[in-house]
Image (cartoon, rainbow, N blue to C red; front, top):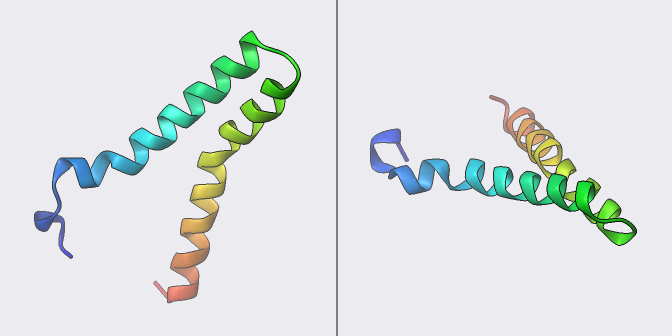
Amino acid sequence: MSRKDQSLTTIFAAPLLLAALSLTGLIGALLADGAWDWIGAALLATPVVAVGWARFKRVKRGV
């Protein structure tokens, strides 16, 4: 699939989802205690995990 075939929604869906998860994790961890600290840490780690997964998939593919 070339870039011309993709809509703006397709291109920006994953980055907007990662931003929303990170923002939710940051606000939750800052405003609440207990379980929200763990949930916030997990949500803040999602972009790191996503980048690591994408790099691993790219190396495995040979690109």
